[in-house]
Image (cartoon, rainbow, N blue to C red; front, side, top):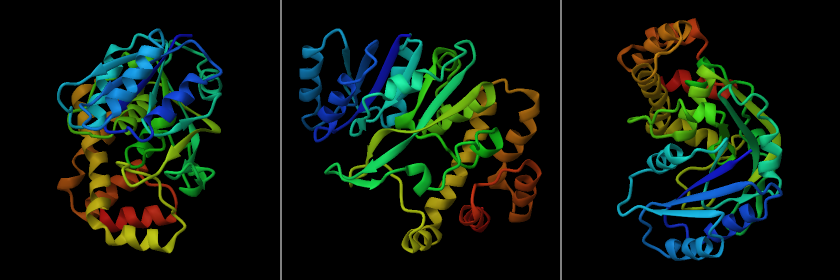
Length: 300
């Protein structure tokens, strides 16, 4: 199967070379790496150009003249151009395990069915030291929670571990308001296909000061109290689910069984707390775990 690896880069000169090297060393060889530089202002373009010249048959570089404004826009520009059987999305500063592609593509058993496959990951710091051997365990993420009512309130798919087939890629539409590409793609997959989880750490995810976001230690008292103090962030994450529900209704002719739930959830911001609770209970739109549920009720 032909594989496209899509890497959106921006000011990643410190780590991008190590990431590209980890892709070159993959045990599966039928891949093409498509890199789109989002008008970097550091030395990223110089580094990537060197690799593209060295491996012209394997690495294709696209250079934006102006910054797109978000990783989501950059990734969707790459997705629209891909014609491969399977698409992997890739961060600029991680390290792939050598058998990442090989272990993931085995899960694509029905290429006609829209399918997304994702894995666990190891968290490392800026010096490659391990912070967490398993993000799924440290974050208490249940990868089986992939039904639409679960995905609307909590994403379980980490973009840097994600791959999906052409059947899913062909039906993807870029959201205008929803800024998180992996959450959006996972939710579309939950409606029209399936999500599979490989219980394996296929990526060393780099957590450092330049990350747009990153995993935290959920068992830490500091993390728990910090989350409850950060009202703005908690409310924003819930509101992203409301926005996503609205955009899915606008962009897709969704199956009848999902329409009422999506419509009511898209209107959550207009409801009072009692009305919100009724919707949550009615459709089972709960986050996983006691602490997350308490936070959901507190900030809704």
